[in-house]
Image 1 (tube, chains in turn brown, purple):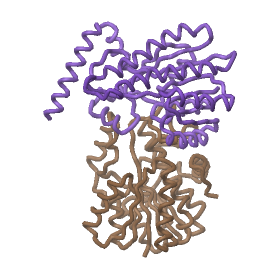
Image 2 (tube, chains in turn purple, yellow; image 1 turned 135 degrees about the vertical axis):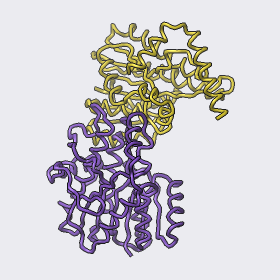
Image 3 (cartoon, each protein chain N blue to C red; image 1 turned 180 degrees about the vertical axis):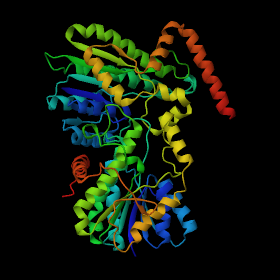
Image 4 (spheres, rainbow over the protein chains, first blue to last red; image 1 turned 90 degrees about the vertical axis):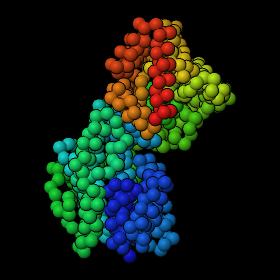
Length: 280
Length: 264
């Protein structure tokens, strides 16, 4: 049986993706923000898929130390179950904000959760993923286009535009995937970014003002999260790992010209420093 | 530049610490929440490469302040700036509130702030300028029924800062009172802002701007900083309308809102 890890699994795209993988016979290690959310999502999935193999981990991945803690818990769980490898890691947890807000580490929240959390968790779980020639999938977005990474002010402190911060974090998802491929494709590990499209989820519910109006408008024409969920399973079900980086509705999609190996290396260096880790 | 920040592990204190780190200042951070200090120290060091020292303290306790200062002296730190961010907010009808809680508002916002300000001023770097910021509030601009103690405690800081500014100016100390409106520090605050609709959104201060401008202004020697055009407009009305009228208006407004809320 193949084991996968998915973050942000208690609602929206993450919940439907976890359900789909569980129904397809994968063992799903699901990470959610709180115990209450996890319990709710667990009974939700079990109600449609009673045979689901699920384990839940509740941490706030925005905080660096909680990423470390959940990585430790997952490793302990794998050791207990005698599992030595992971087939896939889906870095899906994300948020949208209206204002400049910091995590307990003093990092801007969208950058910290949408990018740094996945960057760090992937590093922690890398030995397990390399064993099985694993696949790492980021929930990116078409909003990653039309923007460059603000290298000199990555937390956007000079003048915080919340939508710019969101777009930048989604560009970082693709750069991270690109950098992973550059480093580990020869070792059998492949990374991807998925554009879920416009989806009706809870994202943007904790915003107010203009940003709140933006997200409400955006989501009005959204599809059900079951549609993008298929894309994640599609990538994992291919017997040979697909070679293309960016996907939309199970099809290869063009991505921003900013997604270069040079920018990916730059992002790796910056993120390694901020997370206190090293990919080597 | 050595900066002491109180209440550093919370929303505004943390944003202030990030702003100081961005400027390359070395930091001494304290907060009653000791769990929040360690990750912030690590995060600041990774982002800015500045020196960060942290020690938890309860500033309402003289003994706790003494051990904080003992640590400062042991390290031989002399300060160039003090940011008084630590404070609490609470509301409710005065007679119905828990007595110790009410007294605690004044004890933390005012008494503890006086205590640390007095002791940090003894540890000024000799021969250089010094800067102090008191985090007052928009609430300092009006008497606010049902939030009487909080508003008065913030008024205390505003008046104290303005007087201290004049008193210490000759010895090279700049004192600034910061009077912010709402700030997006945590989910519960954001909900409150959302409930207020557009009015809530326009009076909410942007923390990345507010922190930068606060430090800019105190270094320039300004006395009071009310961030945001809407907040300045409200503060202006606060000065021209008789305070008794404002107080009874605010009370009626709140009473109505509460009645509606109880019904609905």
